Length: 126
Figure 1 (cartoon, rainbow, N blue to C red):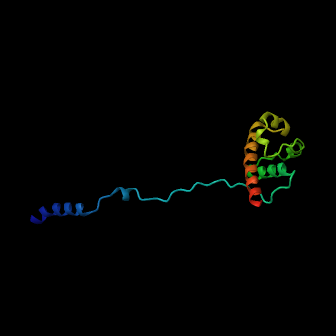
Figure 2: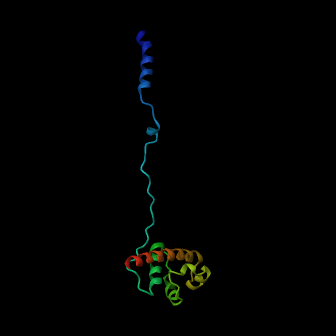
Figure 3: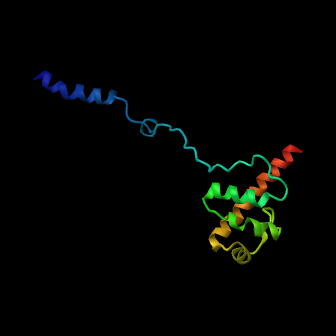
């Protein structure tokens, strides 16, 4: 009987001796997630003067899968180069390039970034 009376006391003491879950054990530290960046197509080598728009259109095709290369000659004839393409009204580019508005907007954004990378590369070479 004495043993039967002591069992609840012993188990109670063992339960208290067991470490309780703390905030650290409930939420162990984790490694932060890294965000992926879409890689920009390289600008190697620097396109020859007068061929920038064709190079930009080619890189746009590689990066976005949108082929607007048929507009390269007319853009070159109009001297609409990547450095100013984002300044041309979308409606004008749509008619010149024979493309829908969404593709033209995507190309304008791409050409701006493309030209910025080109300028950085040119500065590094000089």
